[in-house]
Amino acid sequence: MSNEKTIVPMNGYIMLLLFLTAVGFIIYALSSTGNPEYALLFIPVLFLLPGFVLVNPNTSKVLLLFGKYKGTVKKNGLFWVNPFYTKKKISLRASNFDSERLKVNDKLGNPVMISTILVWRVLDTYKAAFEVDNYENFVRVQTDAAVRKLASMYPYDNFADEGLDEDITLRSSVNEVSEALEKELEERLSIAGIEVLESRIGYLAYAQEIANAMLKRQQATAIIAARHKIVEGAVSMVEMALDELSKKEIVELDEERKATMVSNLMVILCSDKDATPVLNTGTLT
Image (cartoon, rainbow, N blue to C red; front, side):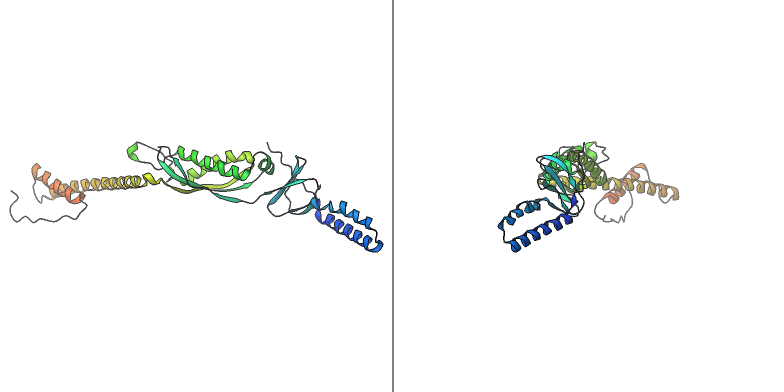
């Protein structure tokens, strides 16, 4: 539960005018009367100086009085508060955090290198100041923990030979993975009053020790898929050729010659090299 209390202190320009007036009066009294006792008036006047607070745009000042939270100043400008207040500055600006590349295991146990880019800002100054020790370090640690958990929930890629039917993978499902990461970070960082504006995977790759093997595996999968299409098309073309020869009665082929023709056509159509024609100048027998 948030205990943040936004306050608007006394106008600092009025107190600045009073401070300058008091200093001017003391200087005038010293110069006109020559009485050094007027110099003692500088002590209470100078005591006003620690009470001035300057709040820049998109920043805030958390005020404490002897360890007790008194409120947060979010309004921009020059203000004056109790000189005994302890002031802690907390930025309300959006911040970027690009995590280091972590070596983690995906759902299948494959080591991958992953990093994330996080855009965040402080939403609750009370939680950021008092619920955690250091909210900036808290963001870094929790982001690394969330990335490790996310990587273990999904496989890097979906390989058919492993019998997987995963709709979401780290490599192909960028939007889904980013949404899951953002939700995980919101739950983790809410304790520190941090608002997650955006989170996404910044870097993703297999670890170096298995990168070459996985690349060959991906290439083999692509080759197998291409060969499957080639064979499927070749069977269709052979079937069409036999049907057309039979329909137009160009040549009559017995079962043995059909088998030979099918074999030759499949070799020609499925080969990864150009076929070399051979002219038969004799008979077919």
